[in-house]
Length: 453
Ligand code: GAP
Image 1: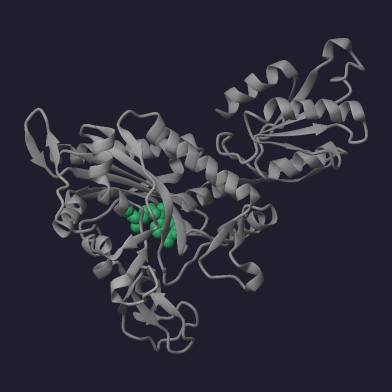
Image 2: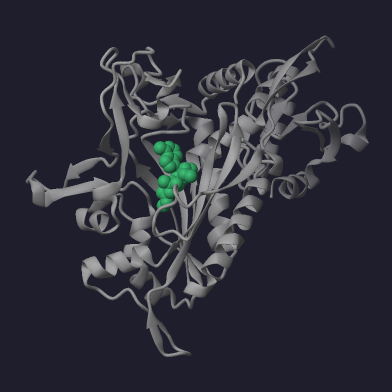
């Protein structure tokens, strides 16, 4: 249950995201387009850090996973075979009073009577199925034969390219194919900021295996994925594993877990980990007439592999990272008076900017030149930000608010003006503890690299 304090916290997070350039409403100057969001200068960095890290641990650091990047526009037959054309729908209700549309499960119920969550109206239509896929036409003729869809999940192109990927990578079971990319769903009621959007990104892995390995690998991937969230700064106690019941689970799945996170608006799904059996490959083999079988060279058997799928949402994870990182504490201002400090405690691995670099004064040539030398030293290795405007305390606060874990200040000691022993040393300040240490410029890169790795 979320409280008024949670709602207020969420409002502050949404406002910070806009004010500091993480996330903007899409097409804002034209009044906005519901359920669509644009990532600003810092949001794009955070999102990229997340995707790069997922790719690193899922593909680069493993021998048993290869990557791919499929087209977004998808052949109608692919989505017919997968079941999306027939069944990828939500039950929709209209309120005849305020004309709003809702998913059936979003209605509120008072004294056993269903009501519109918008106006409280009781004059509601019956539920009807609404297909969530965005339909379009490929080519000049806009007729039945040219219908295509924006993909509702990245998974299907992995299944359709299973044989090609297998042949070129020469992998043996079990092995996986990973993909990060956009997916589109015409959600009836997008809400909770970016949580339920109409255009979003997924990080999906289809891990192919033998039937007898399926249930064990489902457990394995659930644990791996929990470890992943912890390694990007989401504590285990805020993560929950929901076992999806037989009634809720897709009919072809033998087991599904939802990994949930305690968002300020309630406990909600971040990722699904599903054992999808051999359903998808079997469907595509049947519909295309092309063999999607695997040949086991040892047993000389041919069979359709089963698959375990960890499927994560990029945007939901970014939102979880921001919600988890947001905090307000008390810190002294320039004159030592305590004031509220807004901080994003991002894991250094995820932080958009790794290090702020400041000359103590902007009108001192020696300080500015030295600070720019530090920028040149670090820039090839990490994303840094040079700032010379305002008092040092203000500059620290600006970086705290966007989650920069380290700041370096070049001062008169750096120039050797106070103590020759301190020449070419700088102040390294850490965001969370606000502690400062003196460090030689020559040691800076190594010290920071270890902490942001
Ligand atoms: N291939 C399986 C699949 O797509 P899903 O549970 O429908 O499964 C997987 O989606 C993940 O994609 C979700 O756990 C969520 O993180 C993300 N996702 C799904 N719909 C979304 C939406 N409308 N907005 C943002 N993220 C969404």
